[in-house]
Length: 297
Picture (cartoon, rainbow, N blue to C red):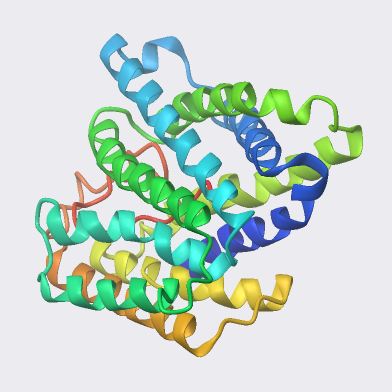
């Protein structure tokens, strides 16, 4: 289920890229966020009494960060191959693993740094600097997303936090995307984006929710560290983006850093009583030092 979750996230991203010419990167991101918010409101149906005013504020901030994560990642995908953009975005949760509470061994910082150098190939000067900047901005949003999800997940039960934060992300995404998408959206594109929103992020959240009931947080985080490699594979199979030797090696170094940091830095698993899924993304508060997926990407 964890592998299927990562695969659907990256498949959704790969299938979105061909729509950039029709709807733009911002338009596709805004529509996916909007549909995801609608779907989760219908499926989870949160009620006002489910969250306090303080929790509502935290969920709203989480929604803003979630919107930024997807918008920046889609902008990066318009300029970078899927594998490269995903690996650069993964530096956000990797930084949380290395330097957050319960941090992993800093030796993995060197592995991540080598990976970034190989991914960007500064000796060629071929990497789009603006695309890399968008990917790093998405990485910063992902890091903030993990920390906020942990805080919200401790206070809001089940998927209710997600059902509150995602509509906020949808509204913000549509506001940003409206100027570019209004003149180009059609009924067919609306239904396509609805299907893509169901494919990612709605389906991955459900799969992660179930997976976390069967895996330790350390094992789950280690599996999630493989996501840049899955992105590289999806880019090759769906988009025909064949990486060169250096970028492929760079993804391997980033994956190794993620696996190593997670295995050495994850907090001890919670007791069974307190491990009941409660987070706004996949139901359980993410453990510090455990990279999360990029459900919105």
